[in-house]
Image 1 (cartoon, rainbow, N blue to C red):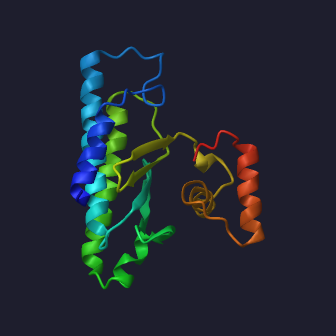
Image 2 (cartoon, helix red, strand yellow):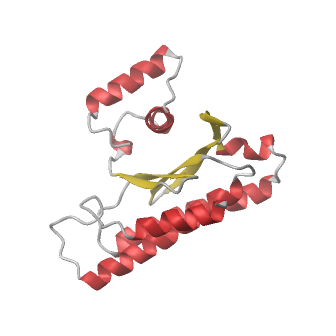
Length: 199
């Protein structure tokens, strides 16, 4: 199964997933046609994000995790991926141009595209009067297993910096345990203060 086929298969499965309370609360009465239109827009953007990440990874990948944090003032995106030969080791997207001698301009164009697609996804929520998320994490395996998680925590109102959030995120999704005792303490503090693990 080719990489583009895997993406099409995974996103198609996602189309059949019913929007749950994380997307539409029971307090809001939305017509079925509007919900369907929202789902279609979301899944189109899921597909485009996954295809862009796929294009940016210059080797055969086994799994990737894409993260986007978007707000009115800006935001950022990044992703980590592994290979079928080394499932335990994840590669950081920002190192792709260096490790594979890829033109930085080409990389920046795709990175900008990921931001614009993520911002467009946020606007879908806004246009449909849905609660706006702080960030989301998308994961896709070469087997076709697709997952999406939205985080509604306003981390800007907490003492957790963006770098803190990244350390916690990597621990949750990549299983990375830092050697630094301060980082370990940070993760322990997070799980105590946020037992529902929203990131």
